[in-house]
Length: 315
Image (cartoon, rainbow, N blue to C red):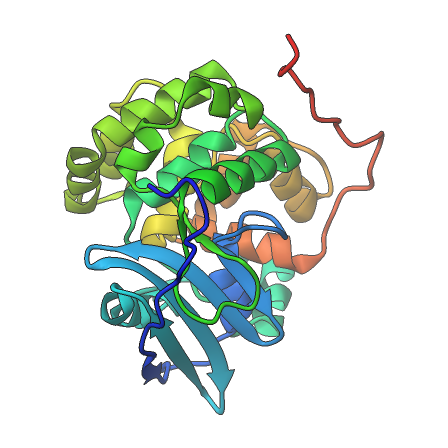
């Protein structure tokens, strides 16, 4: 855990590789879901290059991804550089299998799929890293969650190695999250239920990650994740989406998602049960449909002011 910027950053040797996908790939739409807001210190888009600050079993690393002539070229720095390069195919959706997905069941989905043939479902394989960010998003606005993530990661993470385009930070490991003092959670605007859940997850991170990765299907992965107090179906689904590229995960309980799906597919809002019924024709690929809906541009007209973040830090 690093509490201050490294006064003498090491000059790491750059490692490189490339990956040529079997099908058309939209790198930014595929990997962009990993970014937590425009000021995320762990994911930066600089022109056509996506920079990722990540933690591997071999250590921290910075990974730069560049689309080029039908392939993705990757450069990496840090003690985990080689391990980060090994992640390249999975990050680019190589493990995503759209076999059996039929977008023709709805004209909006069919049209959006035609316009976005390069969309793939990324996966990091890092269950706890995904879970930690998702826990901070529980029951708050995106603005609040992204702000808390940025403050805590910058303060308690590790400076990203290599020639990053702006200061970047690798998120804390499980021990780093566990050791964050109570005043820091409070200053970041994180409520006690969320901080307690994240600390419990950090304490069980190795066993939890093993259980999730060993699970054979979405229901078993949900069962492993929700065995931890404070983790419900929404948190489990959001974790599966980022860590495992789960094509069937649906974030039931999301404040907006059911409304978005209902409006896109029927022109009217619906609830979670209605959303699941609407998505049923695409069972096995429901997350793929959700991603396409969000790319479609179909959005219900705003009926009132945006929900303002509530600041409890002075209470």
